Image (cartoon, rainbow, N blue to C red; front, side, top):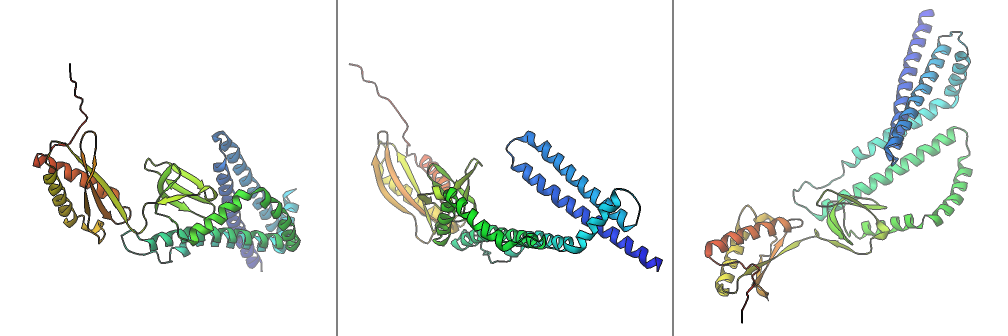
Length: 351
């Protein structure tokens, strides 16, 4: 009989240690996350102090419970442990299980969404954009729902009237909604952006004076990263006009300038030959669309030279690489043919 009682005490003590470690770690992680949200770095020490106080409270609770489990007459830890043990038996275990399930499903959401089809093609397609965008939105929505449901179940198990709380929250939410109209507009505009597939994660867009790749998108905000690596957070309600540079197909518009003394017809022939050779290059052909490039001809008689315009039809997000490569090739070809490229000059005539 004593052996079974001792085994029960050992198992209970082990369970209390594991429970205390989990609670301490979860609370410290939450406080650390809140600390990272504060703008001032000097505030971090206060959050670290709060984390140590949390570990201290958890340690005190586990020690008090251990004193009660082992029936050690230590004051005031024994009565504290007795009250905690009673609360755990009545409501605490249910609350802890709900919290554990909430954390588990919260972390499970990204793993479940990874199983959604995202396309295995190496090319940039609208299907991949929609899949990545829907995953981002679903992840944020599901996590909010899981946290909200977990909080309601915890409050219900603590004895609070959840129905009255929801009714009160509805009234409070109405007041908050009147004060947070921009947030509501963000969500509504984000919903229509997603519904109409205007753009998504992976697209390259221009919003006002900002351009970059869409790194993250949800119903409230669009996150852009520009060419210099800077990240821009744009509320969806402020997006009135957006230019998408990676939808379905793209085009590199290249203007080739030649000097006035150069033979125009020969220059046009050289440009057409170089465009055709570039299009048929096996290393670059897959980056073009099925429509072949076009040489429009003389686009402008500029101040210092003649401008020949070339249109290179490319797959999404490939137009910049194609434009750079063609400029390099045409420069080398014009040099080889002896066709001069204009540069600013000034002629002075003395009377």
